[in-house]
Length: 115
Image (cartoon, rainbow, N blue to C red; front, side, top):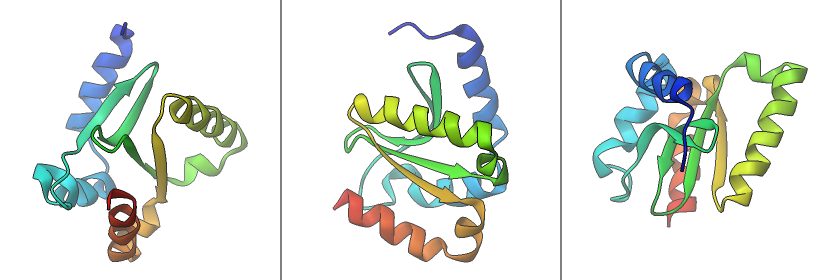
């Protein structure tokens, strides 16, 4: 698959500059710590960069900040999710505050999908 070189560089930059919420979740899902499944971070799928991907289960995990509540971003995210689902992926979205306030609940939702 052809990838836009701008997006490749952006994904590399995003891996180096993860949000605090992404770091918190990454420390739980990386290195097969979550039911033995491998996750990658800031992965290109088509023209999109997804936060976390478990290729084996075709599971994408997105962590959204408040900017995702803005009208333009709601529309963008909806179209993005439709595209990803057409590629055979399941997209789970969590808000930043869910990562801080209910990480156990977030992990349970992810585990339910993985098992």
